[in-house]
Length: 177
Image 1 (tube, rainbow, N blue to C red):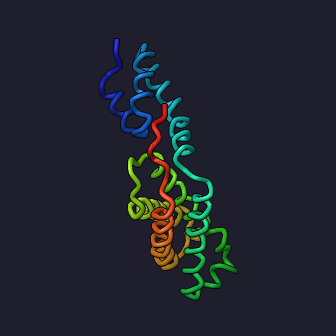
Image 2 (cartoon, rainbow, N blue to C red):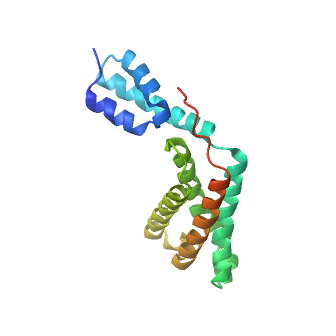
């Protein structure tokens, strides 16, 4: 008895490529019913992705990337003469939100990419941060970072994070189970 092909394709798409074959093989061996397959697949998804992130991300480089992201947004606000935003409207805390979203994008990029593409990873993670800011602006406009700060900060971040990723590429050569 084997699992339905559409379920295997869905979980194959959700799992990082380096782990896909091993995890799908284990799920295939333990298959009893579609419900059981989905429950087991969902229960292993987060730990497998977390494990892959841990194996492909260097903590020191991650800290440099976080600093480059945060500093880019703060520098953009200062260059655009948005000191009032930073000091009077909790701007330093509000800038941490797109920084955190972009950092998550970079972590997932490490986990899912086969070969490092610095510009693609930094651009896609900052696009994710823009979507996050759009959602925040829709729900709580007072908590969003001003668009001009977001735009200039993202451009600066793309340059700095791409340079960091070129100098210190993620560890992608390890296959894990």
